[in-house]
Length: 285
Ligand code: NDP
Image (cartoon, rainbow, N blue to C red; front, side, top):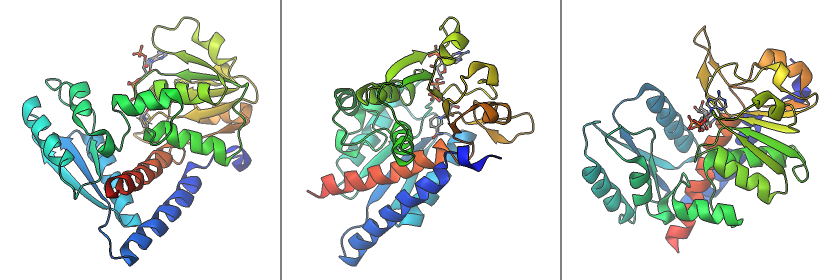
C-alpha cells in the first residue's frame, strides 16, 4: 500500500486523544468533578451496540465517565422525552447522546430537539446546526468536525477547490457542505436522485462519500489526483468492515485517501471526546 497517500485518521485521532487526556488529568488533579457523558440506547440494534461500546471505551481511555442508559424499544416517545428532560436538568451530566436510529414509532427529530443545546454533544440540535451554517463554530457534529480536522492536519487546501459530497444526511452531508462552503470550497451535494453522478464526481478535487454502500465509489468515478474521504461504514462479502470506496482500485488514482477502518471513524470518536470537554467547561461556568 502506498502509505504516503493515506490520510491516517487513527494517528490524528490519537493526537487529539492525548490532548483530551491531558485536560482531563488537569481536572482530576484539581479535584474537580470529572466530565460525564450519558448515552441513551433504545433497543439492542447490533450496530448501535458496537458504536456505543466503542464510544464508552474511548471515554474511559481518556478518563471521561460514560454511562449508558438502555431502554426497551417499546418505550414511548413521551417517556423518552421525560428521561431526556431529567438529564437536561441534572447538573452532574455534561453531555447527552441519543444513539440513532430510534424505533419507528419515535420521532427522532422531536427527541433530538429535546436535548438541551448546552448538553448536545452530537451537535444535531437546530441551534447548533444554525450556528454552523452561519460560521459560528462553538461545537460541531463529530463526523464533519473530524473530517475538517483531517483537512487541517494534512494541510489540504479547501478554498477554490471543488468538493463533491455524495450524501445529504443531517449528520454528515449537509453540515459538511456548510463547513466546506464557509472554507471557500465550491460544493456540490449529490444524493439518490442526482442525475449523471459520475459526471459530477469526476469533477471533484475532493470527493467525500457518505452513502453507506460497499464499493459504491469506483475508480472510474474519480478524477486523477483527487482527494477522497470515505465516510461509509459497511461490511463486504467476507463480512469485513469497509467503506463506500472500492479502495484497492481507487488508490492508484488518488492523491490522498482515508482508509476504512482507520480514517473518518476514529476522528468522529475523537471529536466526540473534544465535544464532551467543551460542554463540561460551558456547563461549569
Ligand atoms: P444516510 O442513509 O442518512 O444517507 C445516505 C445518503 O446517501 C443519502 O443522502 C442518500 O440519498 C444517498 N444515496 C443513497 N444511494 C445513493 C445513490 N445511489 N447515489 C447517490 N446518493 C445515494 O446515511 P448517513 O449520512 O447517516 O451515513 C452514511 C454512511 O456513513 C453510512 O455508511 C454510515 O454508517 C456512515 N457513517 C460513518 C460515520 C463515521 O464516523 N465514519 C459517522 C456517520 C455515518 P437520499 O437522501 O436521496 O436518500
